[in-house]
Length: 182
Image (cartoon, rainbow, N blue to C red; front, side):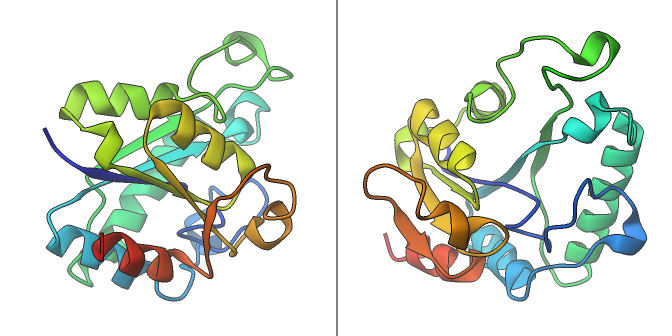
C-alpha cells in the first residue's frame, strides 16, 4: 500500500481568490512548489482534493477546472514537481441542475479521499490531509488520515473555529517538512 498527502487547492497551494478558474488569476503561495517537490522526492503520492462549487453555481465549467489543473501541473513540472492526481467536487446544495444534488465528495465528507484511496491503494492511516479550512480537517479525519491545518488562505481564521487539537503550520512547506520528519 502507498502513502499519500492529500492537499486542498485554494488557500493551501494557491492564493485564495473567490471562484478561481482563470489561469491569469492563478498564483502559488510561496513555498508550495517546493513543498510538492519534496513530497515527490520522498516518494509520497500527492493528491489534490478541492471543492469547486463555482461549477454548480454556473460561474465556470468542469473543463475550466481541468484546464487550470493542467496549467498548475505544467508550472510545477518546470520546477521538477508534479501532482499525481486531481479530484474535485463540482456539487453544491444550492447549485444548478444535476450539480444540485447530495453527494459524498464535497468536503467535509471524505468521498474524494476515499475514491483516491481505492484507486491508488493508499494506506490512509499513514497518510495526511493538508488544508486551510475546517472542512479539510474534518474530511481528512473522516477518511482516516492525519489532518494538518495551514494558516494560509482561511486557515488563520479557521484555526479558532476548529474543535479539539489539530496540528497547525504557517504554510504548506512547513507542514510538509513536518510530514517528512515522521
